Amino acid sequence: MNNNYYAILMAGGVGSRFWPVSTASIPKQFQDVLGAGETLIQSTFRRLSKIIPQENIYILTNKKYNDIVKEQLPGVKQEQIVLEPVMRNTAPSILLAALKINHKNKDAVMMVAPSDHWIQGEERFGKDLEFAFEEAGREDKLITLGITPTFPNTGYGYIKYDNSKEKRIMQVQAFTEKPDFKKASAFLSEGNYAWNAGIFIWNAKAILNNFRKLLPEMYRLFEKGDAVWNTRGEQQFLDENFHLAHKISIDYGIIEKAENVYMIPASFKWNDLGTWGSLQEQLPQDENDNTLINSRFLSFEAKGNIIRTEKNKVVIIEGLKDYIVLENELVLLVMPKKNEQNIKEIRDKAIEKFGDKIG
Image 1: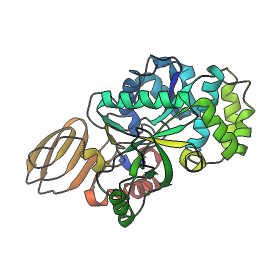
Image 2: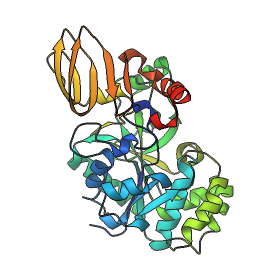
Image 3: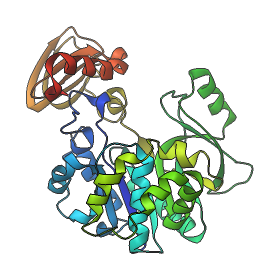
């Protein structure tokens, strides 16, 4: 295991599309949404610790989730939990992590990954990641893992890459964020597009150079903290300065503008678990295509439903087809699967009427 390898797990989001199971107090990354016996962040941490020393895996999250992280990842030290005072999208958080890691190890090669994705084929994932680390350690490349598209999904970003030569790593030509169906279909026909999984690998110096060049104001803001990284003074500096950072994603701020971006086609299966429908694709169904999570189910002409309850509850449904039935301790949500894109709006209205506690 290479001690120069580091990982940053992004674990600060609320996961509002998975409401009411995912809430602001316990978002989906800290929940066992797959019914697998471990939470999503535990699964991601375990997967990465086969390649990266556990002490080199950092968790980027909001201050209010600090105790949850320590409870679910008991082997993680407090200095590995990087706490954002406020949410400012991914670019400021990744810059902060890169500065901390570079301050600790000038030869560091780091990956950035969401903490709440589903990956099948962990051995293949490990080999892809090892290759990416080797490439990023040898040259100043910003590397992303691209997923071979299986249908014209309009909910993912797309990566256009140069496939003129047979290579395991290809230069990225362009990014397109969530195209419409017609454009996504054309991308699949062209054959040199991949889904953007949001998994990045680079050496710390390379990403810092790109921040210095492409987001200079943000870089200057964080550069002021050079003397306090990895010390007791770090959190005070962040509390006083982090909110001043421009709110922008790493994709818009750096990746889409940088010149040295490359893609490695992923050999593993991947899903971003962005919606209940995408979750259903990864779980078994009963004889009537119902997906059950934490539930014991008795069906009377109930077909194609997603049912997720608390604590192995008995659920009896008659005559319901293609619905989502979701609950937590405070909320029961029943709605057609075809309308699941409205969950965020429904959550907002429910919070407005019944208070923040349910959201």
